[in-house]
Structure formats: structure tokens, C-alpha cells
Image (cartoon, rainbow, N blue to C red; front, top):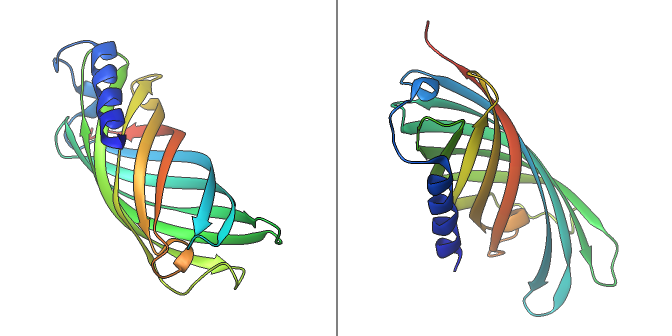
Length: 195
């Protein structure tokens, strides 16, 4: 179901922006992209069939990308997430995590202001916070994949929207606590080109 939804979003973005790969000046080879994005999520969870609750996450991430061609971009990213967990009938617990990852982005350059893209990546997370909440394991994020679109406000700045799916293993540092996360995020990018 999730793969069909990602495919439908990518197909829709291709139709909306129109055909053609005719113009790629904004995303030419050698261009660097610096981006900043934020997101939030509210999740319900159940652990081992014995504990229910709600989890709220707020994430901020920054990324540096390099365009190998107008279509292919490689990027590394880092950021943090603040998590608040409210188990039913118990006190709220809080944690923070540090994220480091990378991804391969496939852009669809065209003549409009909107440039859709899809990506595949992975990463790791480390945690700190309430002892009862945070384990000692490093979480792996494998895979993370998604689709998005950049709306160019000018030649060097874009407003970005992204929808992604991540599979997190050892979530919150707890061994075998695996989580599927769907996120919708907003952000901005600036582009630096070779002279």
C-alpha cells in the first residue's frame, strides 16, 4: 500500500509539472544544494501487546547535496529529533536523538518552477534522555525513501515539500523495537553553482 502511494505521488508530480527534460539550468552538474527542513508526527504505539500510548516527534534536519548530473544528486544530512512519549496511565517521558544519514536523489528537471524528485537513503540515530525511555542501542534507518517537489522562488532558492517512509530498527535505542514512520515535511533550499 505504501509503495503504491509513493508511486502515485511521484506520477502526479510528473503530470503536474508537464513533460520534458529540456531545461536543467537550476540543477546543473557541479551545483551544491544546502537545505533545511522540519517535520512533526503524532503516533500511537503498542509494545509487546502490553503497553499503549502516544508519541510526538519534532525533527529538524540540514543537508548538503551535490549534483552529479541534472538528474542525480548525492546528499549527506544531519539533524535532531525531540520525542515525547505518553504511555497510558503513566508519566510523560522525553528523549532527544542525533541523526546522520545519506541519500541518492533522482530529480526530474523540466521547464517549470516545480522540480519533482524521488530518493532512497539510510542513516543512524543515537539517543539521550529519560533512562526508562532510551536504550543503549544505536538505531538504524534502513531504508528511508520518498518523493518530493521543489518550488523555485528564484534561480537560487526553492521551497520544498517531501513525503517519506522510514523503517527504524532499534527505535529509541531499544533492542528489537522496530517502527515504520511516514512523514510529511517542509523546508527551503539554496543552490550554489560553479562560476
